[in-house]
Length: 309
Image (cartoon, rainbow, N blue to C red; front, side, top):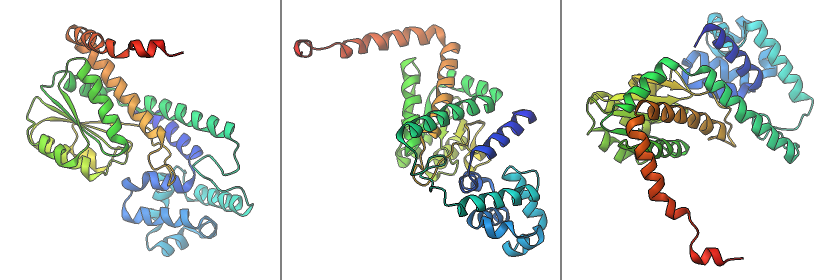
């Protein structure tokens, strides 16, 4: 991602994402000292807004440099800007504004506003993912999948649905692809991989052990490994030859697997599928046609269904 793109993404993320959600989103990539400062300002914005950089460093048991570094990581040019934002946040909280149910939605929002806000969030997440996607890593991942003898895909929870979607798409163009939601089976299958195979790990947080373990095993066995995650410096990337990053979707405690996390993952899955189909078109097209032909009868109404009024 270019520096201009990084700056644009950081500004958009800062403007759109409340402080608590921002800290939760960035926590996996923070050092313990930076996390201590971030959690302190998120927990007590009014109190921290009254502290100088030296006082906040003493309050959190860190250093002034760590406080400044935390401010920049949260999207502010410096501590002064963070302090002003904290003061504004404290004023908003004191004004008695309706509490938030999710990142953008309050308990008082009418249903049409809820629908419109969620739709905007989805559209923005997709745009952010497309803008930040590393095309070099994507091209390398496509080649790895297109030429693989076998493809293992790991995902649990909401990410398991995305893993199944990718496996189904690849199967329909003639590739050997299996999605593993059971962590034991995932590791068992990863042990069988070797050079020439590929493994894909899908985890928004990038720190899901049940996904990291089989990817690590696949990596150690010599398979080409791909990580699809919302955290570019998360633990899963240590065992990935290629990293595909989705937008940092704004999850909350009410929506720990927010739809925007999955839609951004599904966008990358579609990019992988279409590009792989392009590279393998001579075999993919007949395989896809055969799958359509095999499934067509199942989509025709039965005689009893045809008689229903």
